[in-house]
Image 1: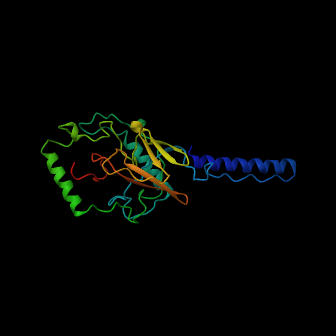
Image 2: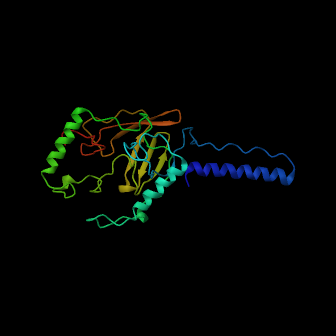
Image 3: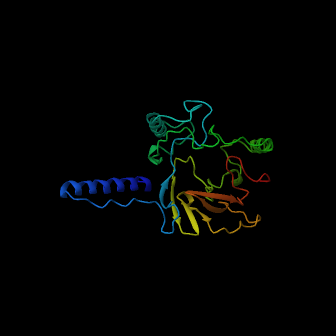
Length: 251
């Protein structure tokens, strides 16, 4: 149960308890104080166990039933989640050992929007620059000279995730081991990832970023609160880190 659901349940139980006292005793009862999701020092409370699994894609697809739509009905969203889970139990494709079935898939939340990205409104990651597209084409061409993409020629052909070095700074869109634990103090927020057991540490005390010559797998994060929103700016990603084709062009 999520923290939000637990809070709603506690509120309903408190209200039910108060109503029972009024009916049973016939006398006024002091109102139950509202449940607030704040830390002892006044920041929004993000602490707890979280799971990011959902069949809602990061980007809105350009084709299929989700294309051109911003939202789904609750029934459509649930159907999408159920169908994606069932797909893991289909017979494996030729050449696949069928090592993962629905047993290994986290049970996700059916969301009624058609992409996790809400800004820009088209639900899409902005296109790479012309220079970025050229770089990716050159990298693919160079990789093709070393055989099929599913047959690594060297350890450098494998991602840090495959090599159990680092999953990277987020797990958006993962269907497997999508659990996180968040810890807070007045000076830090720590996001502990289940896979590879990495901890993303976000200082909140206004300290400057590390020098650019010090790269880190999870990057160098600095955070601050804007109302109830935690804003995190991250620099200094290790050149071997790769997200959506974004990495140091010299690697």
